[in-house]
Image 1 (spheres, rainbow, N blue to C red):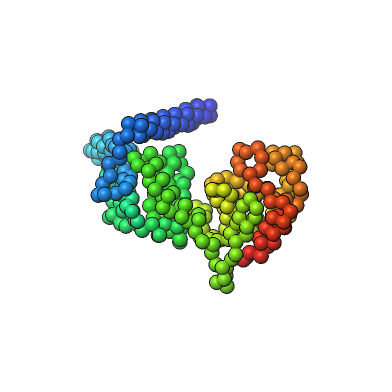
Image 2: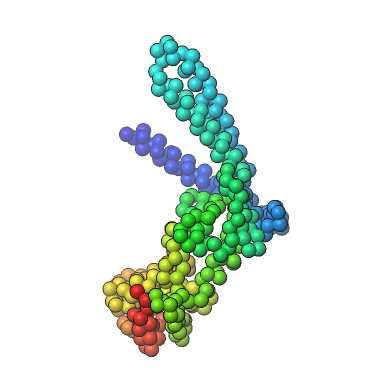
Amino acid sequence: MWITITSVGIAMVAAFIITTSVTAATKRSDRRRRERGEPLPNEGGALVTVRLRTFQWVLIRVVAIVFVVVGALLSLGAATTISTGIDPSLLIVAIVVLLAGIGGILLSRSLRRTRVLAMEDHLLVRQGLQRERRVDLPQIAAVLPIANQYGGLQARDVTGKRLFHVMGLARGYAELEAYLQERVVRPRMTAPAGLGPNGVSVPPWRGVACSADWTTVPLGRGGRVRPVIRLFVGGDVVVLHPAEVRALIDGRTGVVESESQPLAFLASPALVDPTSLGGRQLAGLPPESLALLYDAQEAPAVVLRDGDALTFRAWVSGLPR
């Protein structure tokens, strides 16, 4: 048992060290390239070209070739001696190793072909062994992060279908991320408010320190379009789920967390535990007020008091359900 635990522990530590080292080395290399003013190679007049790094597909190809050679030798040896009574499972293992090597070679080829070209109003995407295809910017309904050890992003349409994805270690990833933020994410975050179920525009709410509107934006892993409340605070847009804000207004919950970055919390001083961190941050505020707290900030960024709190509560209560 202890041998198994030790082996698993060593494997986890090794995986962590390898992931951290590769990520750090890649970011350091990119930072030095930018400091030297070296531009990325842009193919076909693209503003941004994203390609996987050479080591990503070369390493897979080398390992795959080794698997093919070992699998072929084992298969040949097992096939010539199977008449002597050798265990057939050895032949099966040899064939599996051989097939894994062939699959690895195909994978390395697909990684080498993969690229994303970002143009003025569209992207040309070639992933794996598929043909290159065009993705217009209006098709992109959501840009979502990929949760893995190296990071990355994926673009989805309004139905949740994935249009393309990019690994965080790919060359040109940071430039593509900035491109999508400027041309897709920010314009959608400041898009006009949506229409209610009856087709009538939902009027925005305006207060002294902030304003809000009701609209629909892509949310969640599937990127499906959902109704949200957007709070406009300075240059930030805080996205909140209407049902959760309604629960806050009705006194059924004390804190509502934002649905996207920046991470923020809308809280009611009357409902937050006074001994909690949020309670200490809201100490002294009127119980009927509402406060917006940013993550890692000691004081509220905005406090809705008196008339602002009253009109905001009434506005939320009247939103489409």
